[in-house]
Length: 563
Image 1 (cartoon, helix red, strand yellow):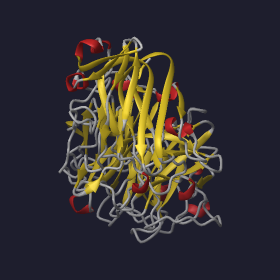
Image 2: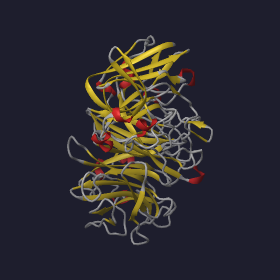
Image 3: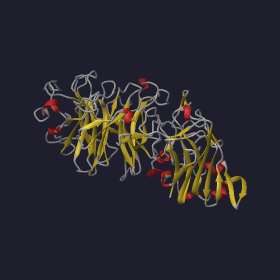
Image 4: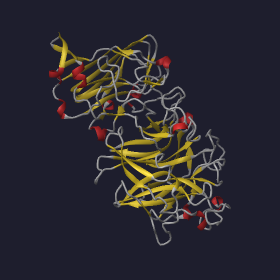
């Protein structure tokens, strides 16, 4: 049974029954407590009541519970204008039979409402079938929607084009230029064969019978923050069916309607870490598709999906380069090359065709998964996860998603007004396993897979005490303790969580952890943390006690609050 934002407060087996938010209105914790008041060396020891746990709990957590169908999602975080503070989502539309794009709005990344049809040409442009993978970018007050569609009756005669609007919600109109009418797409390689590199020239015939056609889908615009130059990335297939291996290409744009064909560059090759290279990598399904690019600390990260969209193994991989057009080198899965994927025993199945969006200073990933969580039969649905950078054993910074998730997770800090502040504390543990590192508790990464570039923190069997000590009092609302993906290393409960507050010590009590506390269709949510929620409280020290007969792995501990 799906548990949609439903939690067990009374027995503390989950996050609060009503989602929580940080703010000054939370009030003094003293007035909302009940239970025993014990005196110990002059300090009052209090136990919070369920009522106190539930007080003012909203707007901290989001959850991937959407009932929307849609694939290849793109999320735009609106910072100004009519939709300021909102997220707008565009995707390949099942409800419009891939003949247009709808736009949905959310303020919490959980509940999405349709605004309107953002782009629905209905025969008024060059292509209105197989309309796939929309992405939107803002430039000087205008919004440009890139997409692919089929032109004419040629099977899989797919081209890329762009529509524009003064509003992020549309309606968008097909762009028209001096060299492009409304009845033709933007990208036509067959008209520019002499300009593109010889190794990418094709003998295939396009819509009008001209040689040089390259089937292209999944357009993704990018502005290099270092130079301000514009780029467009896309997926190419020199054949005309999915039996040919697809790959990523990129080229510079003069503006968003002016391709610089002479800069066209092949960026990936199926089964190899670099185009034309010798190092083999295990991709799947003849597929490198659904690309996006971002810049981070002098490196460019190219993400793409491999295996096929119909497969439960559909997943997002990454390659790293030193310029927007590479060369890019794929990262092997054992080195953290997989950004997000699903495990066969997990609730969610399939995780691919991703795009990036930022909320404040946090990086997030939009992607799709199977609508019924099992097979492609009922289509796909969008989901979002937080992204972090971690350092692998080779010293590379690699992208990792804290997901896929099905249980409630912390919202972006800029949205909730508070966030995880565990990394601001001095952390210690009296029972660290040999070879483990206490820093793993607060690196922001929650390992949820068999193969990860960075392990979780491990403690030996027996009694374990973990202490978070802040230099000054902070305002705290939640303590979330993640459990191991490895069932042999999972803790069965929390013995106690003690808060040193400005009013004395508060004992949040024990918590029994059940892997079935949040399950669907007999499968476990490995992203489900042991969690305590309470009214905003001024805290200086958090002490967590765990007792276990076996060594335990704790992937991460979140302390949700603010300074």
